[in-house]
Image (cartoon, rainbow, N blue to C red; front, side):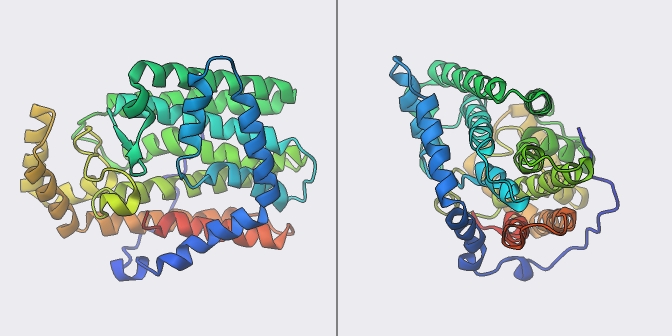
Length: 350
């Protein structure tokens, strides 16, 4: 797995007011990407529906429920944009975009069981509707369906790509579990979890276009680094929003990372400067839970110590690095939108 943290990123703390910009402007890259890839996204949706067809009704019901529940669809969009970036106009990228979406959806189903999450994007999660057993088993079906599509593609390099992705994704899940309430978690360990658990699917999404277009090893590597940096920025903003946003805005419960034992970058940074916060987190770790009042106290302490602002500055640095990875001499519109999506990932409010 590529490791990007510690490679000389400039982490200058940017004032919060510079990062909070008009949300309509930040939403625009997604709208532009969806418009540009509209026809391909329809084909992706058709392929999803086809591969969810089975005589076991719960499978398509759950699959369509979570895929159609209002997510950003950023990962399949990255697959389609990366193909367009290199002028690819055949069809291999369509089922491969579905593979990424199926792997992501399966991981969400399993995550909700592990995290005991009853809500997702402001609505009941699949776990909340069908329960733990169904969520795990349908997640397994989606993994199997993704494998079928990979094998059908018939390219050994693509098979190797997704073999790496699935193993890294699983390692990331286990690593995060092993780091539950790990109070000695440092920034490097935090970024390692993010790279393995979240960014790896962004890596795959971004490199697919270069691979199906038959581009050079150097261009493939640049797209992998682009996806990694964008994915890290995206997750860091999730971690920051857990300490600042309200549930209605982000469409999911907030202030729950610590409740689930997740020691994320905003908290890591804040604990460096606040012994009382560290003591409170140790107390919560010993109990394995915290009360509502404690949750709000921790959120305020993290904000006061600049944890959110620092996390946002790191996300912005990763977004800048992502943009520098984009190759030259390619489709200019796709390149522009990919660069804007990197900024969106580091500055979004939901």
